[in-house]
Length: 368
Image 1 (spheres, rainbow, N blue to C red):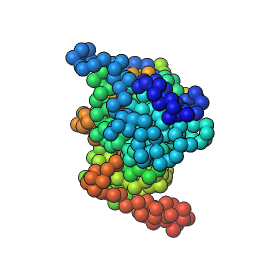
Image 2: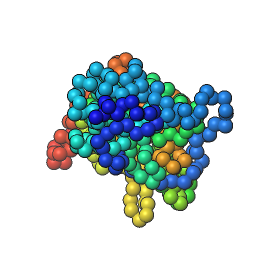
Image 3: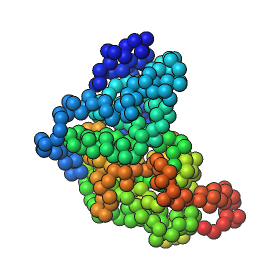
Image 4: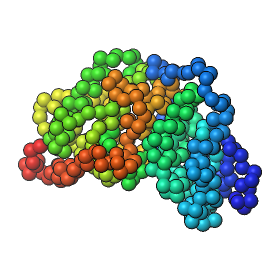
């Protein structure tokens, strides 16, 4: 049936699927915000080739090597069998790429799983997500062959001054650099207070890397982006930091890092370090909140990319002073062998030993 409908498919229109119309999945904290000082610059230039409408409906990005109708025309995708066609054929073309936004009822597969199947069929390395609506964490999913393809796609969006709402998705087997989501929502903007909190966090983080993981503070450098601005009647300080030069192998190691660092913050090895811990907490709506979001290390977590904002927020991530303006330099995922070989793998053995020591009675613990 799907093959018979192929002739009626037009770029920009929904593609055939047995899916229900319900939208994607939710795995990043909702953040409805107002326009702010980090608002992305909008281009007033008219010299770009083609129109925005043409770009929105252009399937060329998704049609790599004449494989737009992947499960039908591509031998690798066709190998999954006719019963799986709705599972791997995108639902629509929008903003120049293919999207999976609905579940496949016949397979019991959600849009994220369908996008994963598509990426495996095409050998794509990057699983990405986009916001569906304002004021919701619901996502739709697309894929890219590599970082260069994602960079080029993002540049196309910027050319047409389209608001970008894109995220990397951390699938379990993906090697990544270590990354940090730091934020603080306050009634009024006070940059000096947030800077002090960041400095205290950096001090504790450097001590953890040195004392537990064996990395010298001299080897630590970060690509940083910020998205400060008005939010829900107050002000939100927000920063993303990505550790340069090192990587961890997979989800298991990311989770181990998160748990180990949390344990370190609960029981710092010196009184001097312990004095910095209270700076990582602040009060919000009568509750204690932490500036470090440890939730970003969960499976299939979405992590916003440079230049993107949560849909409708008006707070895109922009490079901090001294950080690269290139999207690829801020990506968390390690998507090719060349990039991986240029990085040093973090030995997580000491982290495992630290957690074992933490489980022992205090008198048996090793001094870290």
